[in-house]
Length: 561
Image 1 (tube, rainbow, N blue to C red):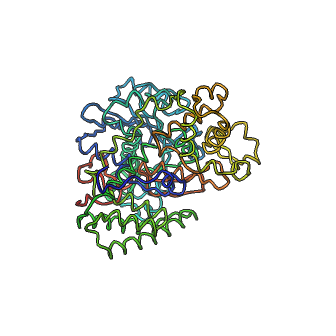
Image 2 (image 1 turned 90 degrees about the vertical axis):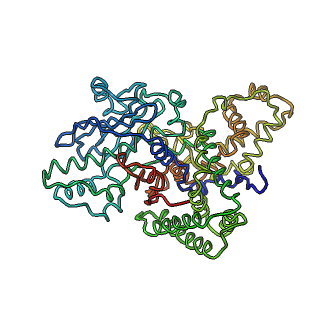
Image 3 (image 1 turned 60 degrees about the vertical axis):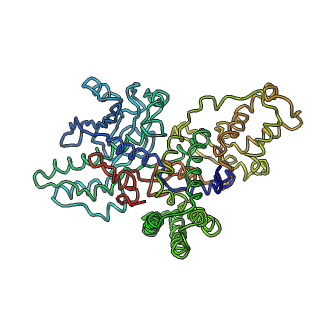
């Protein structure tokens, strides 16, 4: 570390659930990594097939050609009765279904996909397909758009602000789901090395299909009187998503990957905090973006008490932050670090993390390269080191899970909840351990409790004994020994809070993961599921340029650094 360099923040501070649930999108978010890459590499886009009838039924193909290969979204549009429309993963019919095809599909491919993709879980795809997804219309907004455009005028912008999307996905599957290509088959490709690039490309192209489909339906109804959607209004539209408990276990089940996401962000924050000076343009850009974020927080349409309270607190924090930036000297003496230290003493977790994300914006040259470090390429990470002495394991256990060892795990409130998979819904659920007969079906999603159990089992063992000898007698602790050893090289991989306590809010885990996707418009519907928007403000494939490939998330053109 060079002189004057600010270190990354302590994992014990960063990895608390309330802070993780306060993260905002940033330059390292996966959507923005993708749009920057596609613009930088001059990807070209085409729509070779659009075979949709007047009832909105048929298929279309959208191709994205990069430097080395082409990917094609194959979209199937359906005439779905209203009583079959559901946001649930276990639904059996949707308004639209999709697959991202590796290459350009021919007629035989389309025929095969038509027989399988609309069925989703009931169908099967092949390694030529790399994602499978589905979406439903926002019924009232869709009808308003079709009626307005068919009648020759634009839809009401206020209606767009209320919802933010014409369709919302209920799942975007990759990594071998339903027979699709495994992650390992794509990991060596430059364009798919960063996490979730396949899924983000699928959603990006889906958004273009949704725009084209609503215009097509308007023409089918209005004929020559119909008009196209105004490009400015079209850019306000994103793709919605309803995300529930099914996403929460992901962060627990992928500690190395999770570590890499957080560590990249923390390294980016540390690099900017370490800068000795800040230009007036950089300061002005951050102030402008923070002011826009404050306006968004003040006008957010969410009706949920959790989000209303958080928006009000964030708006107050940002007012205080903007006033502080106006009053202080932001020129030299590590200005971003001084401001960050002030925020830590003054603002809520939400305000602090908003500043942390936004102060990265002028410094793409400094932080964007960290995106290449966010995948999990360590194939040996889960291998247990049986030769490790018990004393070393105990040191690691105390260092990462000391918070858990201090809890009274016999107290009902400490283990009030249990994670399980519902046979009826086929989704992860969080139930009340002492009120429901679910303990026998519990999933291993309570590392804190299991760490405490491991520590108890290790009591009395000679510190020089190899871990392998301990595991021969106690194989039930293998999974926790593995997590402890992983923490030695993945310090940000573990949530340092009790994931089965009476007070746990799963929505914090959802918010954390979705912030790395680059989601906006967080709209909780409970403490267990949330609606969000993806790509709102982004250019469409036919309008993507270097000038609009990044700061679209703030509904702005590029600002000078």
